[in-house]
Image (cartoon, rainbow, N blue to C red; front, side, top):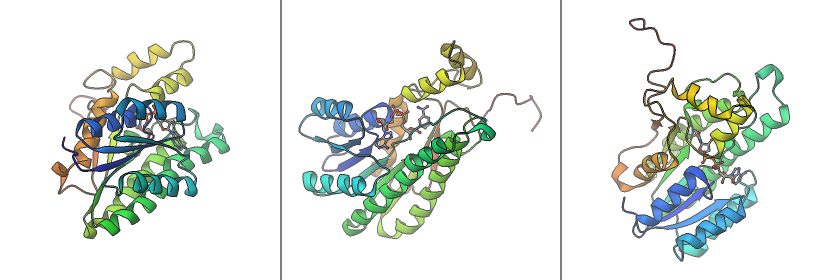
Length: 262
Ligand SMILES: NC(=O)c1ccc[n+]([C@@H]2O[C@H](COP(=O)([O-])OP(=O)(O)OC[C@H]3O[C@@H](n4cnc5c(N)ncnc54)[C@H](O)[C@@H]3O)[C@@H](O)[C@H]2O)c1
């Protein structure tokens, strides 16, 4: 993927999926601002990439931090061509009747308000430039419900809605906005969910879960990054307002379907 002459901003860029996108932008010859609240991992990644990367410590729920990372990208590199709006958390696994209200609010603050603020301030820059490409990280949890994940599922459905609204608003100015919908991907996040679901046997969660996935395995962060990088690149020049799954077939052929019964 060619990112020569391009500047990217990646939130949640210090770890997991975002980290692989930062590395991919660099491989393609672009410059990248890594945004994260995990300063140790973010600084280490910036040092690994070298002079084409900067790290900016930010909490994406705070408007001043979001304006701060936009300013930092412009100060360092002069423009923002590509934006991966990706920071997110899983919250707690619990039924709605038992869900902790404070955790519900925190999940919406990071996964919805953080994505909204990123769109708001980055799209304003891209409008002045007359173009750009944005990918929001949603989830298969933005397409279907998963019992016990009410806060997360609600937040990712909201990301899908924001993606469609943003695509309609800024398409005429040459800005594309898409969403990716990963299934379970081997990062800190699925490991945490497995520990919550089955504290005594988290590895058992993986084999149970993957038995219902046509490809029979978790995805890897780089497999999501490859899709994000394609959508951010000029190869995807006619794609906007779209949602792409990268889930090993999980939503296409969910477990429990009876052969021959629609
Ligand atoms: N791993 C999966 O199975 C999976 C599946 C579907 C969607 N996703 C989504 O992918 C995205 C990335 O998750 P991941 O799997 O790479 O997990 P991860 O925990 O490895 O990475 C998430 C990153 O976001 C950062 N972050 C969290 N809250 C933040 C905040 N308030 N401000 C700034 N940074 C913050 C974390 O420090 C971390 O570096 C998330 O939006 C997640 O919901 C993950």
